[in-house]
Image 1: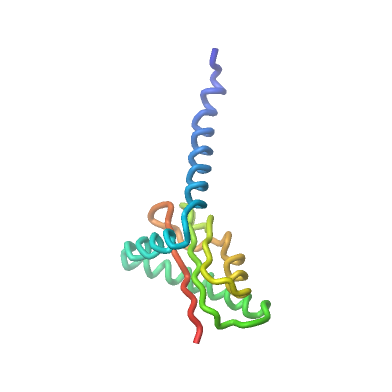
Image 2: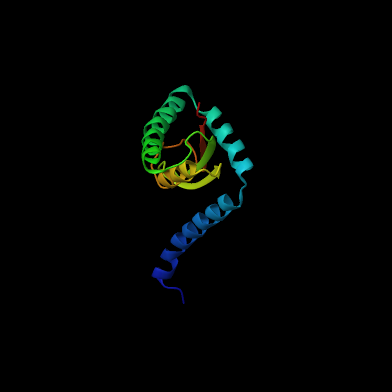
Length: 133
């Protein structure tokens, strides 16, 4: 005989399973696949949301990059790209890094759990493309 409590827990179990499935799916995507998704997702934004995303990237990314430049010795001019998957609250839940400099690794670590931008849909992918001159 099923009790009321066992039936009530089924939606929670389903929701947790759904989250774990999405997490597993994201972790199986290649850098190339997520970069393509990031470009597509960024281009799909209406102008106002695109501006909000760029503003958030500037604030969060600028702070992280400054901290990395201040704390990491070695070359600072090696280009890199960091792709991030955001959840429904705008929190970075996955990252993919193309470029292995110490500054790039520091940047990825600093952004790995930051709140960036509340996306219009999930999963939402966005990227930082860092070129130095």
